[in-house]
Length: 111
Image (tube, rainbow, N blue to C red; front, side):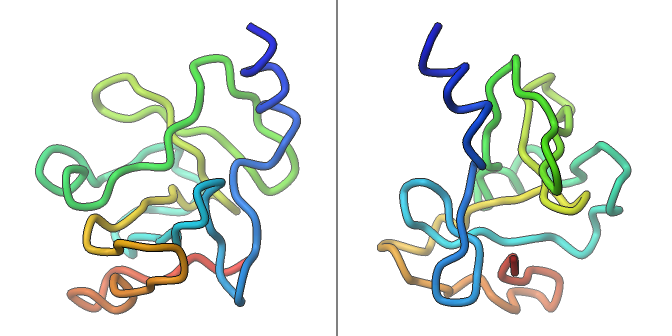
């Protein structure tokens, strides 16, 4: 599929206003309980329902600071500098950063 091949060449997120945002313009977050470089996300189940992972296609390849982690359900997720990335369900529009500091373990992802 040409679209996923093109996506593999393009970073899955970009810097905007000092934070990383998805291609949809929505703020991305990191979770302090994830171990950088572990290749895993510890946010699964209900956690992932509130903090949807930045999904990666099954054929995604690491590139530069971007790596791919395999989630407990087998799905792939993008990580930046070893930290898996997530959206926050309570952000409703591009530029929202309402997840920053939630439970003192969620932080905006910085480029």
